[in-house]
Each structure stands twice: as structure tokens, then as C-alpha cells.
Image 1 (tube, rainbow, N blue to C red):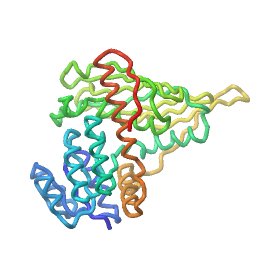
Image 2 (cartoon, rainbow, N blue to C red; image 1 turned 60 degrees about the vertical axis):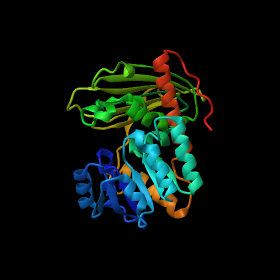
Image 3 (cartoon, one colour; image 1 turned 90 degrees about the vertical axis):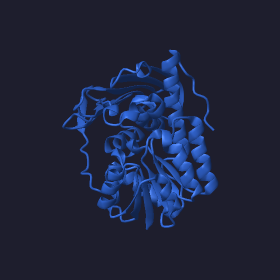
Image 4 (spheres, one colour; image 1 turned 180 degrees about the vertical axis):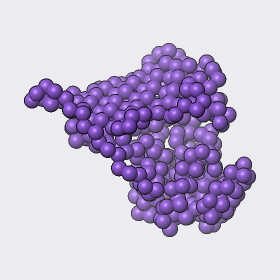
Length: 337
């Protein structure tokens, strides 16, 4: 049984808390938040101890692992403290606001001999798992082009710190890094980055960015990050992968969200085949699956399914996109060590 301390009781922590209720491999011992009401509410829900400062987690002897669900600007500080306390670390994405901080987190975990995994949960969503499987099976031939969209209401309407790009990293570093990580998971290293958007124009509750990636294997990706929708609008995602022999599409707005259209070479026609999503239980939703995988890595002393270096590389590419947006020039990423 892995004993868990949750640091931060805001939005994403609620998704994690719901999972822990059904993960028998773990027990949440304590939760911490500087807002007393949030800590009390989550502690009551989980039958855990409420603390009002994350540092209090590190003084306890009955915790094996921390789940860090606090703003990105605080990830490095708390991950390093957790490592120094000998605790395994599951930390929300992105790993940090800078490469230096991300590497500091990685190095602290390696020095302490603890596991550190960044929660790039998109890899566990069924439509993205299906996309990767279809590509690996060769069903759509060789992938050549990808389009993604991820967008909704600006989160700064609820949490003010999202409005400060120096704290959140804006839509690219906070949100489209999901797509960057997933595409690198599928296609490997990036050769070239170019981005346009209004992230640095500071238009309140209105950010829209486009990132173009060329991978070293030749795949071209067009990534949209949208924080401009009116209040009350749904959050939506789209993924389209064009291959030499077919196309894969998913759209969260569709009643049938996944379509794999494969060229019929005999007749020249195309067939649209819907791949139904499996019902997601409390243990098979994406957040639960990533937590369970991390716990298995702790229990079996194996590598985490999402490596720290993968998270650092994804952060680096998103930072390259932000640099491109600032300068108006293409960025050619260097090797990350």
C-alpha cells in the first residue's frame, strides 16, 4: 500500500482525488492547501488529514509519495523538497516553467533515488491510445501530417494566475504541451518549430496560438491552442492524422468521437470505421491509469512509463514555440541532456 500526500486541492486535484477513492493500491493520508476550505473539503471526502501548508507534508513519516497539483511556478520548489524528504513524486504537467527548473527536479529525484513522473495524461486518453495503436499497426500507412486543436474558456476567469504568462506559460506551455508531448511520444524528436499567436499581447481572457512542428522523421504538425471562447463554452479537442493510406480523426464534439478512414486500394473507395470508446470506470479513466502506472513503478522499482526526460523535452519544445512567437523566427531545437 502506497501512502499518498496531495499538495494542492484545486481543479486537477479533484480528478486525482476521485481516482484515489477507487485505487486500492494507495491510501491518501493527508492533503494540503493554503485555502483552508479546500483542504478541509478534500480531506473529508478522502478520509484524510487536512493540512494548510504543503511543507507540512514533508515532515510526516507516514507518506511514501506526493501528488503535486499546484501552479506550475511552484513545481520545482515542491518537487525538490519532496525528493529531499525521500518521497516519490507524481507532478502535474508541465514539469516547470524553465529548462533549468525541470533539470533541477530531475537531478534532485535521481540524487535521492526516488521516482519522479510528470502527469502527461493525454497519453492515457482512449482516442489518443487508439491513434498511436493505429499508426503502429500501419493501418493508415506512414503518417505524414497531423492537425490538433485544444481549446475552451480562458482558465484565468477562474484562477487569476493563468493570466500571468510568467506564472502559467500561457496556452502553449500549460495546455498545448499535452499535444506536443503526445506527438513526440509518437514521432520522436522535433527538427523545427515556428509559432504565431497573441500570448504576449496580454488581451484579457483571449489567447489563440498556432504552433508548427516539423519532426526529424518528416511528419509535419499543426497545433492550435485556444483560450478565447466565451464563458460557459465547452472545452473541445480534435486530432487528425493523415497517412499515406488513410486518415485518423477524433473530435470531442462528435457523438461518435473516433473515425479511422482507410483507403480501399481495390475499389478506390474509402470506408469510415467508427472505433467505439470503452466505458471508463473509476479505475480505467485516464487519470486513474496514470496514477496506477506510477504506483506500479514504485512497487516494482521500474522506470516510470513517462520519463522525466520526456517531460523536459516536451517543455523545451513548448518554450521553443514561445521563443518563435516572440521573435517571429523559426527555432531549431538542440539536443536536450
